[in-house]
Length: 89
Image 1 (cartoon, rainbow, N blue to C red):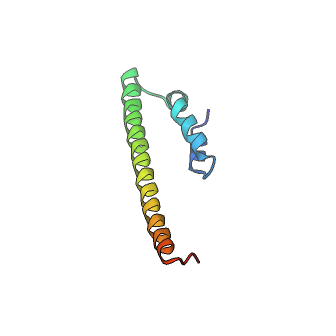
Image 2 (image 1 turned 90 degrees about the vertical axis):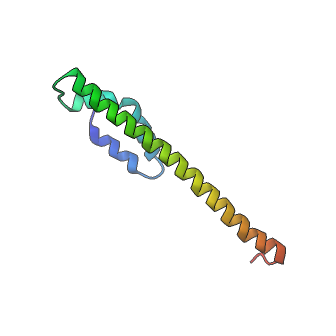
Image 3 (image 1 turned 45 degrees about the horizontal axis):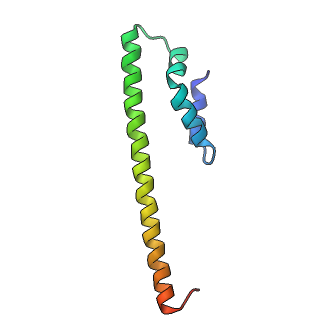
């Protein structure tokens, strides 16, 4: 497997498919793409990637929820003003 296929995760609509694929197959890809001097080095590197992957995932979920709430509040305020004044356009 090629490590650079994970860069397809940056693509818009289909990027999440490649991001999930790389998350699932990451250990296998790392083992095939790099030489590790020992099992301990491999475990340390994978632990670091696992920790940062989880941090980034949680941060993206929290940010997505914040953005969704902000849009909801903004649109509710806009449409609430339009509804109360009777002006929709």
